[in-house]
Length: 227
Image (cartoon, rainbow, N blue to C red; front, side):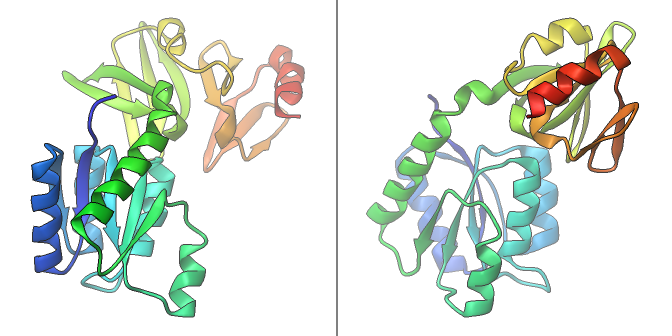
């Protein structure tokens, strides 16, 4: 597996510099950095890092836990880098899904070993990544972030929590890239990620605020898959 492509969210310049130097020694690419929520979420969505190093204390009203909640929706893996130990912060942290914690102050060896362990964990799920071409760009998408697929003539839309991508392939050929253990064709024009289903109505599947058509013939099969 290739090395991670990292984005760093950190508000202490000296710590940020030390992290970047340590990663550079190992030939690990740093896609970008930020010290506040709004810039971080915009750049992470655009740059699509494979791992985020995330400080909890940030500039502005929103902190690293708010960023973590956003990353969880995108299924972007992250490691906390923190000295925060107050009960309120820890309670909020427990509601998120980090790969681990790097506690300040840390050594270069400790930083790199934590990243290595996290990346090894990600490698186990490497088959979850699909590679597509959309709007002339090559994009890697974690299947866990996909909500559903929708046919559009000879094209296909891939809908994720952060946006949608139009792929110059049919729904059938695009669906063949997916892990069939997690995806289900609920209608001739739609495939859904079973991990994202929040409800089933008489003629549709609910995923967040989306209602995806459910054909009568597939309803029974869907119920069995969700048991």
